[in-house]
Image (cartoon, rainbow, N blue to C red; front, side, top):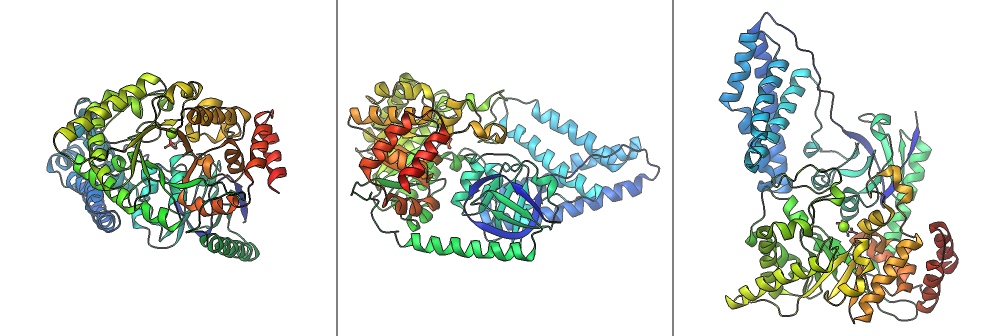
Length: 572
Ligand code: PEP
Ligand code: MG
């Protein structure tokens, strides 16, 4: 039966394919006593053999798609599967306690996991605990005869259905096969949504109940433009969406004609349209979409895509590649912004009640200066290869900025003294994503070379509404006059000091926000590369004086709805 699910439009595009359920199956079991231990050991051996075969396949696929380093984790899993100590103990338990294989597996692996987890000062052992947990799940699934989702093995066109996707789940999706995804939870600015735009995968998030409404293999249409998903559509609906997909493709080809054009308003004012990237390889997409700069390189993805802290040389190569790839255009690299929804398995952070208000970003960098200084040295060395700018995430106070900048200057002086070539023209700026910083933007503007407004977090912190929580998404209002007033304050403060302001939050590519931001005098708009050309097309229709008038009126509105209506009136 056909069903329509409503969610949040997260990434433009239309996709129609069979559903692939990325959900964890029920692995519960009942402990039973057995009277044929030999048969039970055989069941265990069969499950181990099936797990081994599966892991070898996944490892080969991961090596091919993601590279040998990413595949290392599966090698670690294979080693655990063959560990005589661990397997021996499970078999002993079956034989001595006469319990079923499921119970023996769980009891022995639980013991190893809690032993490793108790070594709190040993990150390596803690990671092994995670590996044993993963391997146990796999073996258990074979014992119980249920299937674990293996996204790395997808080899036909699918639409992924999941409760949520972490950034690392999203990074593993092969866009040749994964045509779209729909999740139960999440918002437009959660990182998996942002990544889906970079990957150009149609996505709907925050649908509430996709995982309970869709079954493996159902036909699903994802309309990432409107935020709808249609389960088991009729022939007519399929034809309608095929047309919609064709129209969207035609629209995209029209925008493509603007690839090498300047970004100018109707009255000739130039602005910069830049791309947000997560890896050096994303520079290709940035250039293909006519980016005039990289306004945000989320460097934490280098850390997330690695099995351990990336070395100075590894980072240097990555930054150099991005900088060279942009051929003299500016690349703003943001220093590591770990925490919130971005975790590093090898840097276990304490569990916190409110991770988005917790130990993250510059707070970690100032605390773990070993990590921060390594990153700064890699950046400084890469600066010799093009136009680099650096910015610090989550700055709340003047002192944080001064401290971070002082460490940067120290590392720079050390490298110069050692004879290393470093650019003497690196702008050092900061993210404006905490309301406290916005309120003292005039003070910060004396020290920072530029501001980049991170509306994804700024809106969340200002409205006290978590960016990834669909239940309060009605409060996540980019056009609320409170947000516009903060944005104005930041831009004006930077201009008063002769500095510039960009915006790298998702609002910068939002077609309703762009006229307002142009009116507020924003200098650089940095967005998912796939939004650049449609923004350039829109920019051509806007008149600066009229947009200033629009912005003035919007600042004086009472509600976000009023602002939206005003924008419609001014841009029609
Ligand atoms: C932001 O907060 O707007 C931002 C660009 O940073 P991130 O989305 O990575 O938190
Ligand atoms: Mg942020």
